[in-house]
Amino acid sequence: MQVVKHINELQLILNKMRMQGLTIGFVPTMGALHIGHLSLVEKAGQETGFVVVSIFVNPTQFNDQSDLSRYPRNLQKDVELLAPGHCQLVFAPEPEEIYPEPDTRQFNFGSLEQVMEGKFRPGHFNGVAQVVSRLFDIVQPDKAYFGMKDFQQLAIINEMVRRLEIPVEIVSCPIIRESDGLAMSSRNMLLNPDQRKAAVHISTTLFEAANKTNGLNVEDLCQWVVKRINENEFLNTEYFEIVNSETLLPVKNWNESGEKVGCVAVHCGKIRLIDNMKFEVRSA
Image 1: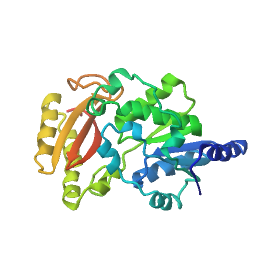
Image 2: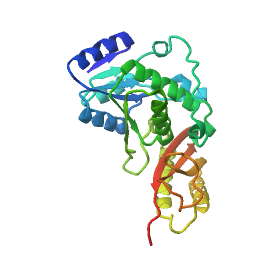
Image 3: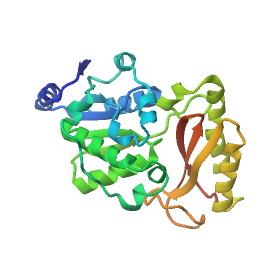
Image 4: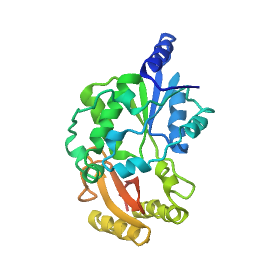
């Protein structure tokens, strides 16, 4: 496995791989890797001939600079985790390599970016679109792999690829959870022991809520989830919404067409955690 920091070196290697007839799989990350990331790498290794993992904490997607400074970074540990698996190349650039000049592009994703994360993190998805499109231009992968924990981000990236006509297949991969149900996240390592114990209450509540679709209407269930999570002294719900999986618009009643997903953001101390779960109305 190679670790490169510069675009020209990366592209020389990838051009050689393409000349050998290999397809390129790409897993973009911000580092602080965990089993969830490794599952994306494994999937990429199963489906493509050469796997690139980028490790880059993108400054343009943080609307809160304190959040950016707190974000965990440990390149050596990340490389050690990747070494035994399917990753053949780690791309770990510095910000000036990705942005030799300020990226002033403005994306407008309409209602997709105006709800949930977009509502509470203004500018976040513009930064996501900037860095992902930039990385796609650099790597030119055949397939790119993203986890469904960042459900809204996945919708934004799919729309960006469609609009910009980028020739890449986006592969969505299931949420990987800790043994107690907490969705795996790089931010979990920032939780102290009491917060970590409390954080599992988020997924526990979502699992319980998913079994209440026949007993409560949408509005009452949303209120129940928020109240239930906030009963824990360490947790404060920023939002919980049940949305259409394609439009991301809030669902008003269970009879509406389309797949329904419950999405939540919760503050556990200063750490912000997100999760989501599919909601189905079961026949009586």
